[in-house]
Image (tube, rainbow, N blue to C red; front, top):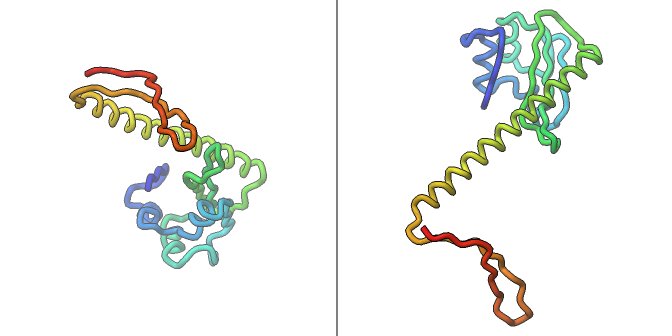
Length: 160
């Protein structure tokens, strides 16, 4: 789990609870149900368990929301959480801004994952080519008539 936060110490009960898998209800609504969860006042909220409420209370958090972070394909790739020190019901313009931030962050995460996968694939193939003894070729499999052996067209060949 990648977690970034600002304004909390590493020892914060809120951070520690989050690292141990707390706030599952809020995370699941945002990541699995793919919708925002707004808790305007955490006092007595039914969307949080006792341990979640204790961690929020210890940190002085009185309201929070969880917004799904989606990529361009609509896949949820993370959750943007925002906390408030006073009870707070976000207005429409605040929610639109959170959506924009979540969308931007979701696309950043997706791009980072794609770049990481490309880098890893490039390194795998580089390693393969550097350790070859003979050579390699890129071929195209040509369709054959029924019962006939398929043919190959060599598109490129290299000798090592």
